[in-house]
Amino acid sequence: MKVILREDIQKLGYKDDVVEVKNGYGRNYLIPQGLATIATSSSLKVLEENIKQTQRKQAQVIADAKALLKTLEGLKLSIGTKAGSNGKIFGSVTTIQIAQALKDAGHDVDRRKISIPGDIKELGEYKAKINLHRGIEAEIDIDVIAE
Image (cartoon, rainbow, N blue to C red; front, top):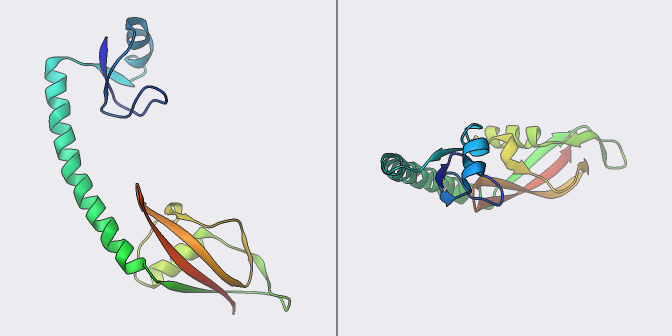
């Protein structure tokens, strides 16, 4: 039985893939759970059109991500925080504070796309990665200073 996947399914395929599965797996699990639809000639035509539209939208998203990547290259943020005399800060610097500093610099980035290695609990310089799109990552320098 051929089905069109509606979601990514591990070890089977990705969304919008046409895959061959056993009849029982398709009829008893994939289709009732809403994970797939039967691949008929009309549904395949609809799938082709959806893929074309998605590719146009993705091209624009990728172009925007690359433009943002160019503006973020070489960016150095300074984040002020309260710190003790030995250089340890009270609490830690989180992705929320990094996202706010980016917003203050004129770049609106979702905090969930920012990743920092480990915890930032001392003053100093660190690097953070921003996942702009699949395969497009920016790396920025962060300077944690005492207020």
